[in-house]
Image 1 (cartoon, rainbow, N blue to C red):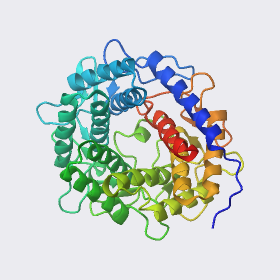
Image 2 (image 1 turned 135 degrees about the horizontal axis):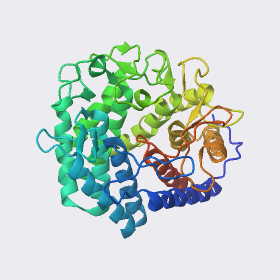
Image 3 (image 1 turned 180 degrees about the vertical axis):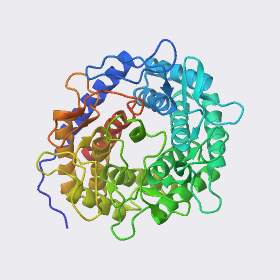
Length: 416
């Protein structure tokens, strides 16, 4: 069943991942704190801070998650103080004390965009849980519980799941964006609900997590190819994707185009595999419950989305044909590191270990800054920069630091 011929050395990989995590931590310790409040999020190709008027909920919560998770891992009081700084700013600037939930963006004059996007609400919950676990702060714990409750104002009681693009009063936006649901946002709900259920063990939190898990498995996996989809109508009928308001794609000055209708994201599929494993472990005590699906999606990514010549994973392609977008973006490749390792742990197929090694090799050569250690945003297939900045309003260390931490955890198990 498995080919045991591999160049993968988990001990050596663990050493390199440990060193990379140290470098990422140094990057964020040196430049993440904005003395005026919150965090710096935008950095040029040399890691220079690019001050911005606007601070986004998505970046501030992702960086809060980063500091809190590093503080918990390291037991480092100085990292926890950096998390304290971001938590105070988040509560003071982003919390909607009147309608509940969290505003989408602020600037120096106050609230800039009061919309309630489930993408942002989910990351607020994810960050609050991480901060509560690292600090033991009761206020953060209570805010996490309150955020979870507020998020259910966006629940679709007719067809299940959650509306994703909502105005300040939690009403779906009166545009096509307000009528869409996506795998992306429901994956992030799986992620944050898993974290909350692990923190509290509360039966309600576990039940809601199981509902999101079952919805993804039942409604958002393409039934023929068995890979993740893109966008859906309210009843989960697949839709021709559009550029949804207030997304990273919508904010790009170039390449602001929707993914193709019949395409799948290799990064999302690999990420979904290990996120399901975490949810399964919390709910069932068995991170291999969906090993078959994880194996299938990793095999698909290996067959169509992995660059066997140069290493790394492409952005997207059809479920049953080679990639149509062969650029290599930081987050897909960061998630591929975890996803391939997770699939290797569950199946023992050394092709996945080699895919991890190939993805890591490409990232080291082309995506990871050689001295600053944060990841460049995007390259061509062969590694020429498309966007070599080291941070924007959508990144925040979350994918990169988390990839290093999750790979460290898995490699440590493999080393024993």
